[in-house]
Image (tube, rainbow, N blue to C red; front, top):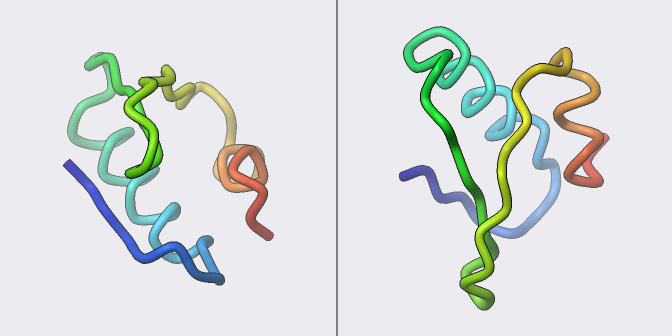
Length: 59
């Protein structure tokens, strides 16, 4: 489980998460959720890093 503070810039922690998951667990299904909402969403890692980060609204 990864967790990081809800403050910008999010690009640094999202880069770490993206890289770790793509390198160490490329075929493992991954979900994400906000700490205040237990609705799990699939995490698409097929995109490039820039697209992955922008999918979270980060720059």
